[in-house]
Image 1 (spheres, chains in turn brown, red):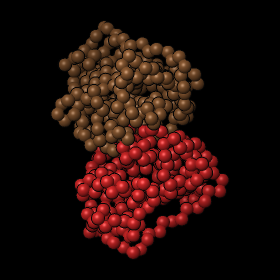
Image 2 (spheres, each protein chain N blue to C red):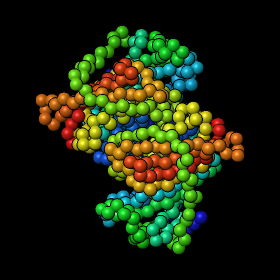
Image 3 (tube, rainbow over the protein chains, first blue to last red):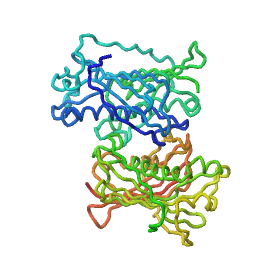
Image 4 (cartoon, rainbow over the protein chains, first blue to last red):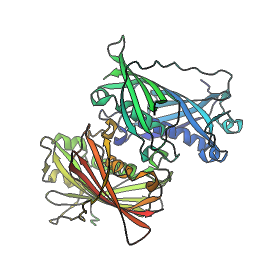
Length: 250
Length: 250
């Protein structure tokens, strides 16, 4: 971890509509608030979306690795902190720390951001001008994430991209993917399991009007209190997102 | 209006994920925050959901009448106020006022709440014990809302109730209905129109696993800058919710 990078924190009280039936914050809501912290940091450093868009560029998130000690609960006041730790030619690495008021770490997230040319929709090399104020460390190394296993015999459900899935940034909100991934697991599973670890990769943008196929399968582990779910999100057979989730039984 | 009733306010900063592509707060997000204000008031008066549930009762919203001067915008700090103005044998009337920091009224909402027996799922007479702390006026009159016209030639789209449509209160969150109602109007319409007035009635609870059919039609008005949309939400042909929305062209 790079302790020299600028750190930014916001406090957030968990509302009833951000919680599931177990009074725990949902993963889509958690991701939304987390990204709000990073957007506020960018605004604070004069590197917000208006600055980046005026260069005809936009940030795109390609990976999250999420470790959950416990999810925030209804009514808790939670601190969402973030820092842009490091970058190389094409990839920017950002960490998030979610802590309760007593400073106990609840959730840790590593993420990868890239810069996209808004006209060509292609990835561009990281611009020093954009990244400098975050005081991230320049590195040569490219971080590798665990490779995800293919699905052998998946089930699937279709989802239509809705108007309100597109946020004020005019993209499908990152958090919405988690709705598609998780919903297929069903009421019985989701009300009796809690997320321990998530590894997710975003491969391709999804647009309004697309029909999304959310594929999944579950796999037992050596630990009888844990289960793995594997996920692929496809549009017209093309892979847009893959994820592996480790669950604890509640 | 009953100025004697207890008034309760919360301040809320509008986040990017609560806004549509026009940087305006979405109606589903607005309803969620508004109801948070009333839930916090109930907690504050020791009449929160734990108190009500322990009597084997629950609050159910049956109507909203929403008047929009303008919707809150991204980044604004907005005051959501509420007071329980009046009640009669079966109906409790609650108003909401949404104002900017300068005190300008943005949105006004009248609503009707009833008390439901959690075992029989039937409406019960209002219990004085529950309602007293709000200092609402006891009235004889039953308020009438505008009757909604039947749809003559509606279009329809199906929606599956998702796990995260159910909130920590274990019901389909009221705000979710607005997602179903509005999404069918499509990208082109929703990105070029803004809501002026909503009249909505909730007739029947919707449960996890239901497939919801969202019917709608639009009608031109004498004013060429306005259009009306009429909506019905049905589960297996049974009417669960009706609404009429008056839109201004953007």
